Image 1: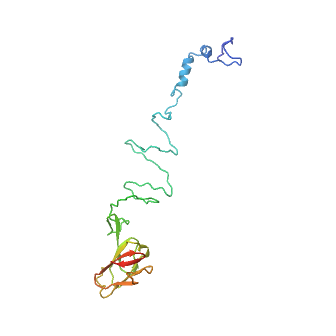
Image 2: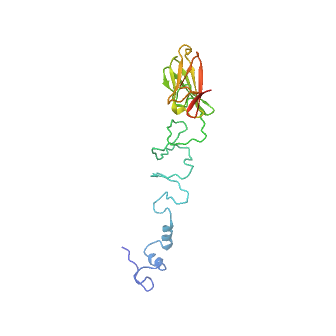
Image 3: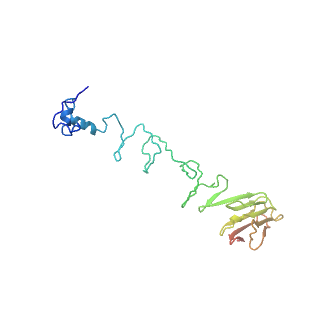
Length: 226
């Protein structure tokens, strides 16, 4: 066990603690390295067996590190060729839209959207996009109420009743009913409003010609033949 040199006046304080001025001269006889070596060891950033120390502003390469609840604050997330998987927080109102994936969107606002696919109702054939607005066609083989966003009804059976949906009676909305059975001349197709809306002043109007059609436009909670 090493023993400190004999005490001498001025080498230490009254409490026996070495001063900064005499530390090197007292410790050097005990070891082969002196104050300069000790100072250099203390100041070294990688001399204690620690690697990958991340500073606040310095550039660092991390190896074998796990980020727990990491917050990515840069818009440049991944800038290398190797494959990486980014896991984002999920919640009831979170939707991450993939480039080619099929996604269900919740609480999203579309600003100037562009619809590039013809079947925008989920795959029903015959739907097209006209001027950015959906144009839905409904084939009706029995008496029924028109669906949401339906603008064209093809009645394939004569004598049925087509009921125009109340929620679609919005100013400027149009719907056309066509006799696709070519039998309306002998068995008229009736058209009524679901909630009692009038059709050019009448409760019921009829298509009375084979292959005939009628177009209605909504205004002020009623329908008008145009």
